[in-house]
Image (cartoon, rainbow over all chains, first blue to last red; front, side, top):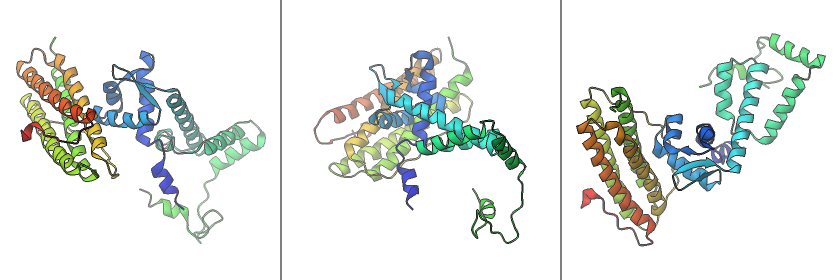
Length: 175
Length: 152
């Protein structure tokens, strides 16, 4: 499995995603145009760093610059920002409302992976959330039953999820 | 109007971070250089890293003169992919142009602080010269013949 390499080669890096979102937020009051200095302050990083990242984003066709060194999202950049926002909302909702992860943690975790999940996964997650919130008695029942489910792991440390390696035990070592 | 003392120090800390970060970039870029003109580019970045660190040091001293301890926040992760000298110089140009712009933006804040104003004006002059040097090399198709001020 070389999935980790795909993670490394992901065309939109975590930093890149934050820059795109920052350009949209900073530029909102100025017709979409943002100054490098304002982006740097918004992200609390140096101008040099912003400038280097913008070069890469420009090469990918996600941002545009003008003669006054202002930066704006292109159509593709705007689409990328919308997709990032949608995935973040989806993940945050799933983690907080379905899995009952505390809201602050759900926010942090969704931010970490928002730009990494595929459109297919995002679509399926949307479907699943729609299914859960459809109001059908069986889905209400499913959500409630999950919230009440606090069963301890069996003493054998194996079950139909773990297949011999207790994932709960492994998670205790999580960094 | 004189800027608030704390605002001045915050801005000086940011300027110092620009210089330290540039220095770290140049430090690492030297080892990524590949291809034609690698050795002259390496010398250029060696001098540039020394110079940017000297700038950071000078700013830190200005912060101390204002009665504060410099605060440094740098978020930097640099990958290990090889770079040709022209790409490396283009990156250096971006960094230097941003540093110059930062000094220029800061100048109005130090009006009424004669010592600081003189320092920032001097930095603007030095950075302008530095940007011009790199720009000339980046824009010309000629082989690299980089000489920094320090080497002159």
